[in-house]
Length: 117
Length: 114
Image (cartoon, rainbow over all chains, first blue to last red; front, side, top):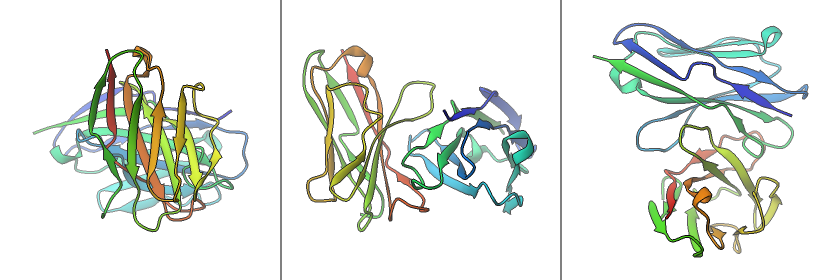
């Protein structure tokens, strides 16, 4: 069975601080996808990134960066120089690669990030 | 439309009633998914359509839940004899093909059973 654990329920930081959101996953599959989604107060899940299990190269996109470590089954997300608009719930998710991107998405319980001005 | 559209945005119903939740996917997306999100939790998978057929309905909690997608576009999630425990946000998502393509989510329907 697949499982995603986001141990941090809530995090508060002051604007411009860096913040890392942790994600640990469990799966028996050898190929899989990992995702991060952002859910602002409006409720819509906004796709941030998808990572294939064979690609352990870290990725940076603007102020966002992701650290995928297969050896520790972790896929952590860092926001650099946080802004108030980054305040949202962030979800890490896992899916079987063969069956498609969201057919069997297993989500973590989310981390509520609050960025204070 | 430009994104996934779900209607209504909010629905309050009495216990025991029947409800229908509608999802309009992004035009051209063949794959459609329903998820349910309870307060403080991540979304939980309900059902996946590829075209008109339900490719995987293993997440439906019981036979009170049913979903259709008769023309391969709009989908309706139907809940019979609603219970208070059905209260949640029901999210719909679509993706271009279902394989190796990102899913885009709607804003959800907040269902409250009183």
